[in-house]
Image (tube, rainbow, N blue to C red; front, side, top):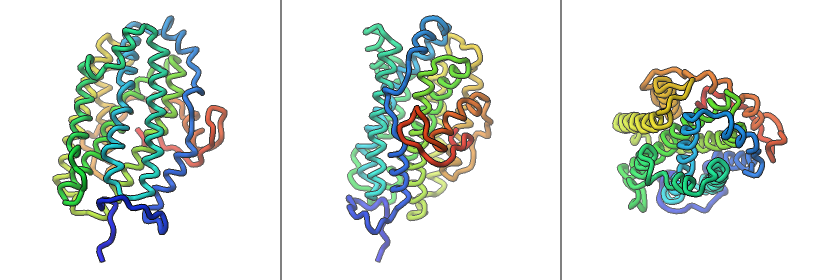
Length: 336
């Protein structure tokens, strides 16, 4: 009898015996990682926006929050339309249900962020419509939609080619969108935090960072499971396609960086941003069990040193900023 696969069409409902207990453990860890937008203190951020940010830094943060306004909604749509349909494991679908809640929480965080940072209604409405009116954000959205659309009509992943299509969608959203686009955005936030600016945004970003890291780890675990069950899918063609996808994502994000940094932000350069993006892209390839392509090193010391103690609190002990303690350790070099 053929062994069941996580990509078998259908909706397996049997939790016992549990075929993939690792996903159930991820679900339980995610439940411990509960936070709310109401816990974020924005008061100092408003003073920073009025009195301390340079015009170029204000442009950078306005563009950044405009991207945030739509980014997690796109991820949530792909989760519902594609991932839930094709990952046939009730344990994994429990995690995906939790992830959907977290994506909604992120959307609420960014909604509150825009409402707080951009008081002018017309400017705020333009930010929420960034996909239509800001070319650098539209280009990133088109990259996302291309991979959503690539399996839009795929009802069942039966053939090797169909399963390959699904895997590329999963890799794109975990490695390029959550793993590169969002981690690039985190770098801008932590750069400002290293200057003592926008601490409220940085606090919320710490929590989003933890969520996104868990989302990626889940996706990489699914990819690893598929590699074990269907090693024939993970061939040189797949490797080449993933590298090309990653290169395209880096170029998309560099277009966004050129927009964000067009006014000249002291301490951030396009050259360093490209190096950082290439470094992160190599980390994602490593997460997928593939060799590095770019060979770049992390140019941003603030990404290695920024708020290590606060992030470690997620894993090591209960803190007042968090509702439920989480046990374990965080390794910064693996996440970034």
